[in-house]
Amino acid sequence: MKSIRFYLTLAVACIIYLAIKILNKSSGTSFVGMVTLKLCPHFLAYCREYVKYAITITGTNGKSTSSGILAHIIDVNKSKVVHNLKGANMLTGVANMFALCGIPFSRFDYAVIESDEAYLNRVYDDFKADCLLVTNLFNDQVDRYANVSETAAYIQKALDKNPDVQLLLNADDPIVSNFGKGKSALYFGFEDIQYCSESYQNSDIDFGEYDCVCGKTLAYTKQFLAQEGHYSCSACGYSRPEPNFKGYAKIYADYSEIRLIYKDKEYDFRVNLIGLYNAYNALAAVSNALLLNIDFEVIKDALLSYKTAFGRSEKTVINGHDTIIQLIKNPAGASEVLKTVDLNSNILIGINNNIADGTDISWLWDTDFSRLKDAKGKLVTSGIKAKDMAKRLVDAGVNENKIIIEEDVQKAVEIVAGSDNKDAKVTILPSYTVLMKLSRMKF
Image (tube, rainbow, N blue to C red; front, side, top):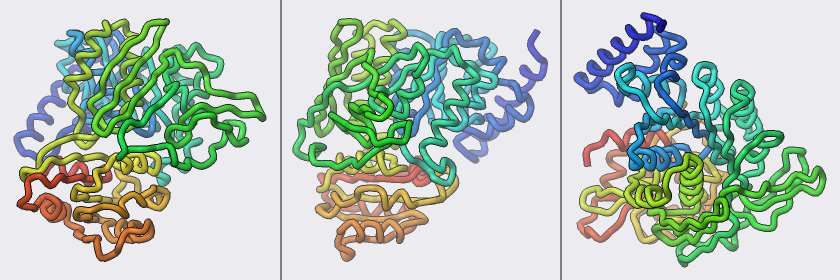
């Protein structure tokens, strides 16, 4: 018999959420969850009974987009799904999602849960997922994760608590694929990638060297993005596992075309999102959807109707100007995003170093900003670290006289989107809390 505390907690959660909305105090993506867990510490264990099949998605980059695509596919398939759509991926955010999803009056076919790498372990304390998808592991927020090995250790700790979980891993990432050793894991990865846009070329990029889990340097026959590619280690024999879901991608300026081979069948689909990183996100989500035996025609149609989460390659209009907003938060992800930037657009880079962003901004100096030397429009830096960002651009070869420093984000947006020429496009590259501020602005 369920705890009366559980039902009382659900009632209190709804009351708090209504009060937040009436008072317009916050987006309500975590506070309700924080109160919920205070009142009922094992709240998620009760919620698990209302979900037939649970999928958790973690990794450094791509969690929000991969989980968003997968949840959208499931929804288009007319299955009932609960998903932390707004990206609140710590324990309180997951609890928040369940507290407001209609339980105990609703049951769900699927839960698609985006989880912060460090909090997956705590999610699994009470909520054992059936499937875990891991996107990639890059150096990120060094104040939270000293290095990528520490991030991997958090995920491994979660796996130790849920040893029977079905693993779906990125074969191209040597750190991620290592989770599958000794387990019946499934893998997705790209066999080949073609760049079909002059504005987005990857062939001359030097990604540097990466170490195997044994500590020796990996050898690559193909290297796509940071450590992702086709790798092997001559010292210990570790190498890229053969993917169960084999992808072949053509990357264009505004979209990607992907061919996926699974169980000797070929599937072709288009992703209306820019960049190789989004091709990886789509490959991960589609692989998971096929694993759930969702009909491919449903998957294909869902991809065409998917609308990205706020700030994740989101296209919008500000003051009449076509605008793209792309979150940046670590060297690998930011460097890849910068390859897709329209150099004719007005560009705003907003950097904060609040706790949610990561207080250490040394990652800016590991990011390749040199492409912005050729920016032709306005180039504005904003946020708490606007001056540091400007200095980084100068170090990357950008003319100091070209940079406009405006710490106030609202005013910075007005600068890049203030042209009377409505054909002028805008690119905004924010850190996380700048992105959250943008989400609350009226344009």
